[in-house]
Image (tube, rainbow over all chains, first blue to last red; front, side, top):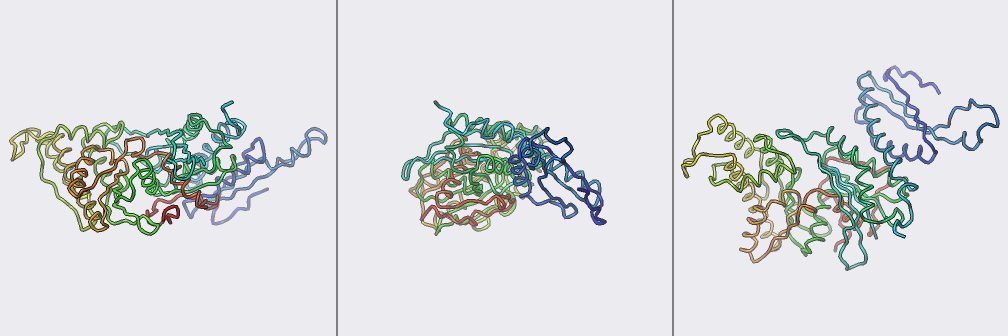
Length: 116
Length: 349
């Protein structure tokens, strides 16, 4: 999916982050899109996409490959500096998102009573 | 019911788990973990660095809080977080974590007003029935009284918070910020004797501290230029301890005055002091003298609950949640300005 070059926001960057499951990709998207971009010189959009299908048939299950496990983040800004600042901020928030996924998810903390 | 609360509006990151076992029964603190971002002497904390600190510690603190509480994800009813007021980037860094927990654990979010968190925790811990609340911290200075389902602000600092005045003077003196600048000012003030001349800026129900800060900074500069300077009344050499003592006596007297004015207005004789500056024993003493003169009493808490913490957010959030209040994910933003009286206190009569 090619990003249209917007003459106003000529500096752009697309980041595709593959995650283990569609559930995680969806959670990341929902958590990150709540906060508006601080600067009007930056525009951003989130989506989840499935992996581009480049494998031979029969190799991986159709269910797995059609799931949207990739978080796609598209940033557009008026200058490279604004783009860099915005993307850095995204990376910082992403570190929290990934940390929670990594250490605080239901399968790690346990949903049931920890005391037997 | 059980709630987890996340707080990060200033340089303290707090996570707490609270249980409300049954109506009428006292709340139980299952865990209350905090980590403070301490800056070197002479420096304050900036939003960017504070946010970085919170991002680094939030996952670890949530894990510790859950482990210490001995509860499972199933037991948690809601996830409470500080919506505001406070510093933008730090607030947002904690909110992102809260949202992820909400999505992964499939629990509702409750956005909490930081000031209301302090008040509700104070009421719960001290058992004060309907006190005038003095909320004093590095970021806030308000005199509050409850009326008709809102915490009404009767008086406040017009410019900077009293704690901000004390903290910035700690920077001027370059004393340690560990565990907190205000704590070290308090210890130094205990050795002070000379009451130096400072402006006294009470304006009706409100007060102002920036002029006092400017004055004490000038005195500190004069003392640094002339270390042999003597106090005109005692004849002793003036020390930084005298500066701290004079500053505390002046600003605390102002706080006592505006609190007393509110008590007279409202007809209450109970005072509840909340917020980090509430840990100061001299302030508690001075407020106590005034309250006893009026036939009343002062309620305070220790640093576990007076200084910013996650348990107060969990407590106030759970009170709201029990009345049916939740914050939808799309609305789980943060705001630097969030007036105490914006909150509809449905959980009280």
